[in-house]
Length: 352
Image 1 (cartoon, rainbow, N blue to C red):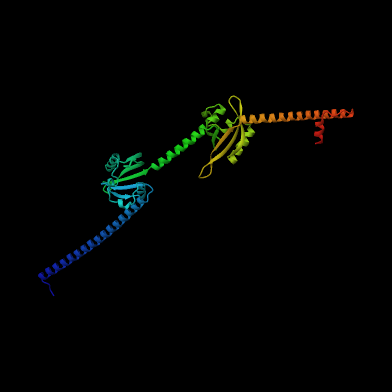
Image 2: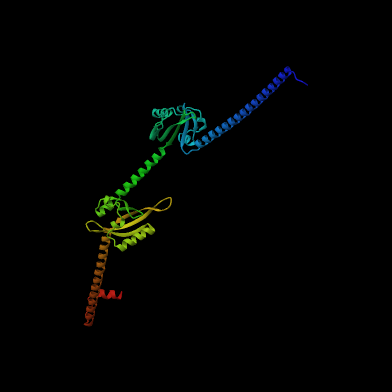
């Protein structure tokens, strides 16, 4: 059946509208697909952001250091448990969103200035910094304040790292006091003291030992123990070193020291090891002496006197015996000639 021109034009119009509607449908379908993908991507990014934020919160919270993260208004965003512990904050979560200066209203002006410098891009630090609280107590801190940046490159706030040094300084002060006290005891002790390391190098001594050798302490410290005990023979010195290497101790060992004037002094030594508390290795040996030169001289004098007394006693005993025998002989002769005994006591002692 033949189609008229009017009918053909109408058919083309219908076909065109069909193609247009089909194209519009395809476009809408593509738009919907793109929107869904965008929504899925956004959801993924949101989930990823939440995970990253939670991870960052977890890392900071459990850090061994005192860390606080602030925004540009110095409101708390993240805080570590160590930060709360050192600054006596009972609940770190309660800090989030609060302004820093509200939590610490008495902050020194120098720290406020440091915060502003960091908000302008500087990294500001302080070492062994004094912080005087409102109640008058003093803390010592080491800190660092640095900016953090958003994706756009703009500063998003600051991160403050702090380390409280008060306890360390207190311990260091107490350790120094103990060291000074022990050093004073060592230096002013009337007993000669020597300290040497594992290589037998003298590391410490005192005035008492130095005076024995008539040498300044500086001429003794740094020398080998053997070079100081020069009056010992090589064999005796070697035996002493072997004993110290195996036992690290001495007990009532007499050692002779020759002074610079040539006088020999007898020192009674006791020594013990100082061991590393971690691995038990020898750190040093400390020896304390007692000058027994005069005591030995008195003992020797007493021995000589005792020998002399014994000799004298033996001589006197022999003399007394001889006298007694003579008296007995006189009594015997008198008895023979009929006369009375002159020394009756001798006879009585004999009968007794």
